[in-house]
Length: 167
Image (cartoon, rainbow, N blue to C red):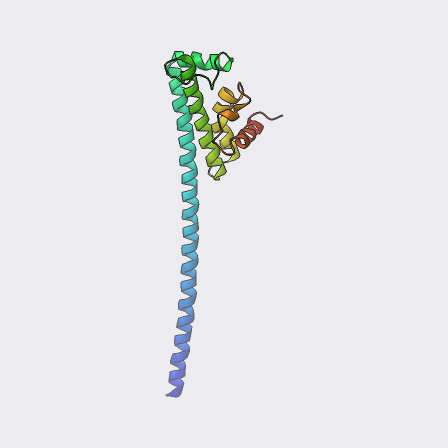
């Protein structure tokens, strides 16, 4: 009888060990699946953030192309004929140009913020900031007045310029 109990105890131990191993395998598979899901979520967030930036560029370009007066104001502003931080009354040329510059700067600021948060890469930052570099920084090298409340915008401009304008 004692031998039978010892046999049952041994069988129970073996079954317990198998159950522990099976449980560990299950936990490992769950962790792997959870990690894969987290990576997919991260890629989805990165994709959505970049799509938003591209959508903003498209909206800005559409507004400019649909409005020949605004296009002319931008060209005049880039030529230095309009002070970008001058008059802010949107009923006149300088005010309209100021509003445009601010919208482009806000776009650059958002791209910079997403870069600082690790959501977009250096190359995506450069791509998203190209409109700001071309239409604001190139003609206003002291763009700091535009980004006074944007921590790190100057650093993001430097990174984007290094990528877009290599030596």
